[in-house]
Image (cartoon, rainbow, N blue to C red; front, side):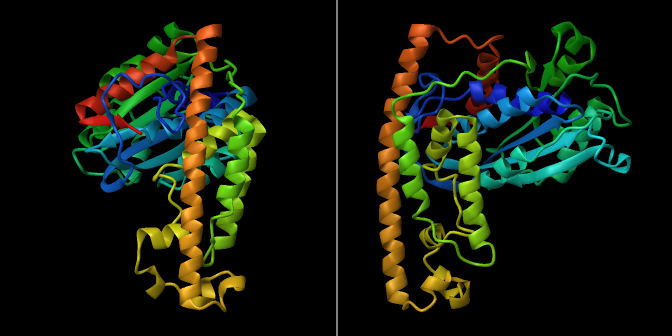
Length: 391
């Protein structure tokens, strides 16, 4: 229950916070800060989010909730701009309180490091399982603070979200010490308690957020995600299939990574058509960069890539092509990708407009208003750092 409490809580919280944008972000907070229009990523600025999940016992509903919110969260993060440019988005996942993890590791495991590989994050999320154990909040915070590769730029946004329902005080490392160390690195700590609010306060979850300069949330981890099906979801899905066809895997991992891209599409669609539409929208952002295995992204980001890629690294069907023919093919695929992304973007705008209209008609009941609280916490830090919301 804890594990899913954690991930689901976090993702649910984060997701409901989404800023609206032309890429169909999932909420309507676009008027909070001024808009910018650039979509060029700047490596110097990072938005880093570590999600610490209690996986100590089974809670299938919360796991499904978390899966359903992943791309919503990604689309939220990608709306933030710094000096008109898209920061590098990195997400890490830790699980804690799981007896499948050795006691020598304090029942804590790094599921992913801070990574911008969105397909990898999805893959690991869908593979999570639960098993009862002891939950050491201070220890997992300390582990994330010390072992993750946090940025050191003053413009970076660095956030930890930890979710669970057991007392925050368990374990050999005090949460007070761990959070103090986080603040020394400029990492803010938000806490998400699943259960009665009074228990969260008594269990020091609120105190952890106060000390971490973050927000304390109390949620109903059993809440079901409301998906808004629209007339545009199927068309976006078809565009996504065409978009995938523009990727050309290269290198030792090219085939496997391209296959994983399709697998994560299936995982998203398994949740709902609406979720698949949100994943497709995430592929419009500069954050969805696959230059480590996709030839089109690689050449787009590095015009000298040809000098580094061996003929043997190319797909077999391309190995006998001349350099000129390959360059022509890649240029064609890049142009095709750009056109499809533009088509998805236009459909995404109509989709979001349709969703906004449905919310007005039906009312957008989100339970305990967690989304507004999370939104405020993100905006507060974003504004402090000089971020804006862009298209």
